[in-house]
Image 1 (spheres, one colour):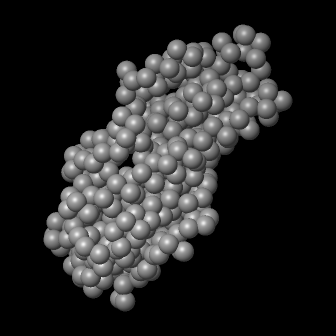
Image 2 (cartoon, rainbow, N blue to C red):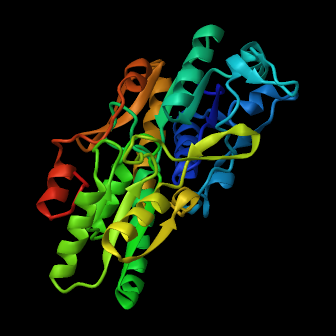
Length: 361
């Protein structure tokens, strides 16, 4: 690819800290090294559906200054509306993939960088295969459950926010002799809960990968009390189910169901089993909107540079990834095929157990 070419970049799926740092890195590498033009597509694939196509030219003055410190994404994003089964106003679904491909063609792009998770990559790859255009993926998900990368953009910041919450809950828990339950995000995996629980000094950590019993949780809290400590900290991932295996979800506008409420359930069960006064804090989207941590900025920057270099080398249908303290790239198909849950015999679980943290089992 020679000077004068143009590449597109979009953010897709749920937002997280570090997305703007990725965009900044892509623009720096593309403009300074290769002399390319970068077009930022607005609202993910929604921008390619609009006519005229919604985009903005990204240059160095736009992405310098405070941008890498900003949470969220300056391009906007969406996690709704599969273009192959797009929900219409009359309740029907329509395949609008050709419109998105047409939007890509209208911009005259030579390649597209998509920043997303497994769901976003599955859709973007399908679009690229159908439309015959070139794509590179950059992994972002606070859940850190995307395969073949040790870390995704946004995860480190989300853990930091959860640890800060525990740091703030501990003094008030001690002041009132309470059990504080902190519900954190984690759609299918317990990485955030486990890492935050270890770093934040939790007594109990519940993750979807490990079945628990209220009796075991109560036993741990009573053991803590027997040492003379008058409080306990409990971290629970939003995807943890009730003891009978039911997922706890809330209904949102438009009929969407999302995880939420397991913290209240666990809090009530602990109160009934131990007689302890419990309080529940649900972090929710606070974990997504923070200023990115230094590590997230570093990973985002490294991913952005490598993604542009892949385009320059003519390597497509790849996802950049972090492995063994460096950046590699892997086939997108392989990345989304492998789900990275918490390894039950991994270092984090062993560390938690070694510290005496109860995992409910």
